[in-house]
Image (cartoon, rainbow, N blue to C red; front, side, top):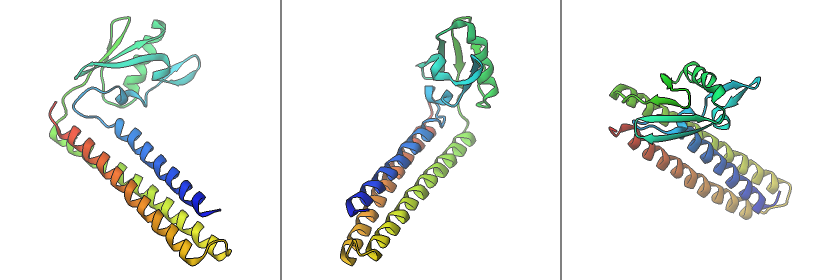
Length: 187
């Protein structure tokens, strides 16, 4: 694998780790309503568990409320059951056309637990990034053993991979700080 391919592969995989982190952080509850809070909900409709987003539009018209408008009002009860069964701790109410979820304010203890969860997610992302670095370094070492790269080229690639690692770890830290600030703010 040529040097530029090793670097490109490492950068793509590190970028994917950051995308996964962003998605996971989006599911962490802050004091405000966020449609991402119900992204993990699957509704039993048409014979199979279907992501909520595929059967309804989800919005947050107020800071403390999520509104779910099913595309087919016949499945409103299934949506309500799925939210209750999801273990998110929400108590949905439906008026026959929409499902409303009132988001209770977070206690300080719950906020601290959320920050702990954020730190865990960031650490997982950093581990993924470091694993990509390890794989890239191994590939560079192998190419040097196979006489495709010189020692200087190998060392240059390893240096570039380390720079990428630092860049993506810094991105993960920045995402965590932003999310921690949002969680700790009173709504």
